[in-house]
Image (cartoon, rainbow, N blue to C red):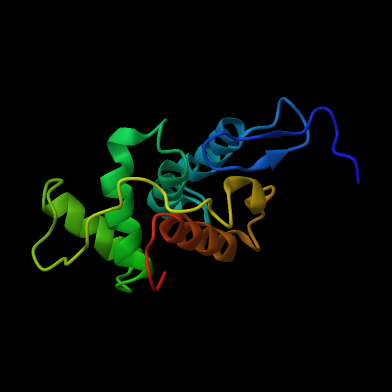
Length: 148
């Protein structure tokens, strides 16, 4: 199959898009609107979605990388419930809560992520939670996390 002349890749995560007006930032804006609607399954998963997006767009979200790494490691490697992760961070006023043993994040991604925001499609409510989990695990794995 010959690629369309309009096909382009995200320079940060590698997602491929067929239309020039389709790109990661546009899809993330749509997802943020769903998150901020406070409707389920999106509203309660905003922190996870932001963390996955930040890890896959490190140049755009450099200031958020360590927090994104910390959050997703606690959820997907340590097995802590997301509401407990975010509650503990709020209670610790942004510092790492006591007892969290999280290794430092690698200086850069070790490989391209296997799942990107483009793979979430139209954020269908019936499949969103599972696809979000896949995206979060792929974001962690691209930075070298084991067990995600």
